[in-house]
Every structure is written in C-alpha cells, then in structure tokens.
Image 1: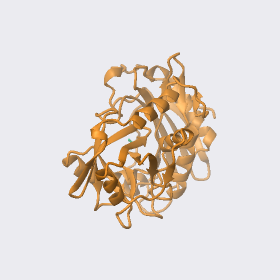
Image 2 (image 1 turned 90 degrees about the vertical axis):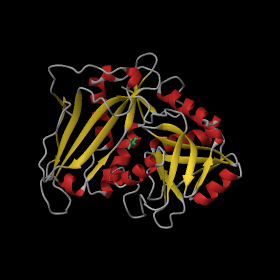
Image 3 (image 1 turned 120 degrees about the vertical axis):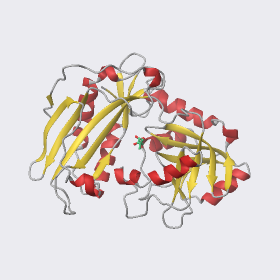
Image 4 (image 1 turned 90 degrees about the horizontal axis):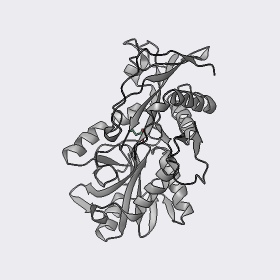
Length: 353
Ligand code: COI
C-alpha cells in the first residue's frame, strides 16, 4: 500500500506518563482511507490528527453503521515496540463488518496500516510501568443519504493514544452490578460485533450501576435474563471449585482477544475450562457457599480486572475478601509479561514494529 504522509507543522506536547488515564490524549497523526462503491479502498494517508469534516446527513450519524477495534502497542525493556495479535483484530473487524454490511480491509492491509501509523508515532509509545499505546481503528458510513440501506461510501480511521489503566481502580478489585432488566444482546443481533450501537445501548445500565456505587454492569442473556454473558467493557470469567467458567462465543458475546489469550494460558496451566452458559443464581449460590474463588474481567483496555463484589437484585457476594486473587494476579503477570517482552512469547503472539 502506498501511504501518503502529510506532516504537521508543530508536534503536540506529550503528557505525563504517570497520569495517562484512558483515551484522553490523542497522538499527532491518524491514518485514513476511504471506500467508494465501484472503486474500493482509495487514498491511504497518514495526516495530522484532527476533526473530520462530515455531512450532517452522513449515514453513521442516523443509522449507526459503524464498527471499531481496540489493540495496543507495547514498549519492551530494550526499547523495541511490539503489537499483540493484531491479526485477531483484523479478523474480528471483518466479522463485525459483515454483520453491519460494511466493507473491510484485508488482514494484511489492516496490520500494515497499524504498523505504519505506530512507526510514525514511535515516540508516543510510553515506557512507564503499566502503560501502552492504545490503537483504535474505526470504520463508518460516510455517505450523505437518509434512506436506510447499505451506504456507498465509508471511511476507515486509526487513531492512537498513550494509556495507563482503564479503571481508576487499576488492578484493584471492582464492584459489579448484575443488570436484571435491560439486556445487551440476543442471538441474531449484533452482540458478537464491536459496533458502537452495542455500547450506546449499554450506557443506561452503566449509569444505573454507577448510581449504585458499581464500576461496571454484568449483562445476562437477552431471553431469560438468567445466564451470565459479559461485562460492559470486558469478557468475564469465574473460578469455582478450582475450575474456570466463561460464556461461550455463540452470537451474543464479544470474542475478546484477551479472553482467547487467557483461555490458552489457562489451558496450558492445566485448568479445566467450561465455555458454557452459567446461571447467575448458581454463581451467587457458589459465592454464598464459599466456592466462588475468583472472578475477573478480561479485555484489551482493561487487561484483567478482578471483581471484588457482585450485586444482584437484593443480594450481593464478596469475592476473595475484595482482594485480587492469586490466579488473577498470575494471569496478569503472565499476559503483560509477554506483551511487555519480559517473558518469552511462546505462543507467537507479538509482532515487532
Ligand atoms: C477494548 O478493550 O479495547 C475496548 O474496546 C473496550 C472499550 C469499549 C473501552
């Protein structure tokens, strides 16, 4: 791909690496490419980061034809920069886009675009413990048209921002509200895609959770509101009687890259994994009987987030005395060890820029 480069006159000042938070500081440049029916993907370019001009009748603003991805670049101790399983994001975006009738970049071009942008933004990849460069690709229908149909014009953009922990709690346990009224996804819908609409529909639950002093929402299945599915920004796993339980990837749950990586590590360590539908009643019961040993969320932004308390209707259970569990900590150390190049990458997950 022949990527045009438009240099900016003045580079931005870089933020303090100790106070990055999540998604607050965008870097100097972004990658853009357009899709036009009949022509395909055209005009790849890296340009100064800034506002995009858009017609108020753009399809995305009305009918939410949009998907996005999230991955990270890590600075290793010898200063090199590596990506973590970017091909998984490329493939997931292709599946999301198929569902939303949107065109996708092929896997090679997707990864090439990310590498080209990160290469330009090398100095933005932070080196402070626990930090990385978050990479956010997004594709949206850019055609101006008010009829509901597959659009004829799309724009794909990649932006980057140096980040620390997603939650203010960092790797300390969070409290989660189990949502028993609103639902996130049903089979045949868009639950397995990373489309903005899924997140828009989750915000009311998030507001409710925050009012109750919780950090996140745990969604139940959309039909019976009985089985655990995923958390607002993460997949979720439960360690009960020494075995691992997590919802299967069968249409309603996001196929998380971190989820998949954790499961591979857990399998290698000999854990019995149940990718199956588990009723929230059984989880709460296990909690009251002292068999719910650890609960943790997994996601690119969140990495691994221990859950210290589950609130469900009038009931609540505290997990591991609201302390990070031994396995949760071990998984965090293992995964981030590979990502930051401290441990050997025996799975072949990382790609050097
Ligand atoms: C990610 O983990 O990359 C996500 O996309 C979650 C996000 C909604 C904060």
